[in-house]
Length: 116
Image 1 (cartoon, rainbow, N blue to C red):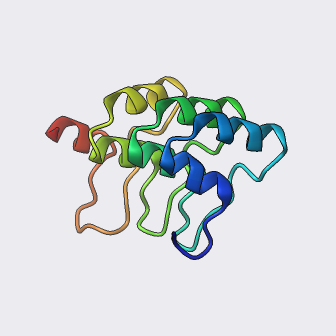
Image 2 (image 1 turned 180 degrees about the vertical axis):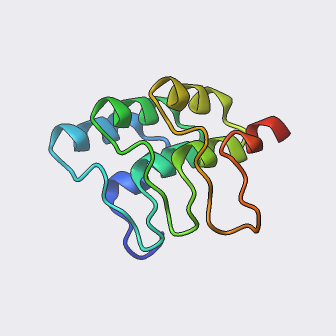
């Protein structure tokens, strides 16, 4: 657990899709960020939780928000090798040309997927 984690961020990262849907139905802040600016969508994509990612997208999650490293949910999915999640994000309109802010010569989102 990191400082600033919300219940939604934690359960999406742990794979509890039904609990995530319940929180969304109750009106939780879908785009709340932890201290590293990770959102529930980025958290779900980090662990390959495609069902939670789809539920978050359907509920209006910001698909292209970036964390403090400049990484998007698509980058998280690609870097971890979660192709099904990455595909869902692309279909939903994720920016495939987004660049992070950490590496010198930042790479496009899909470059990580090509390396998997």
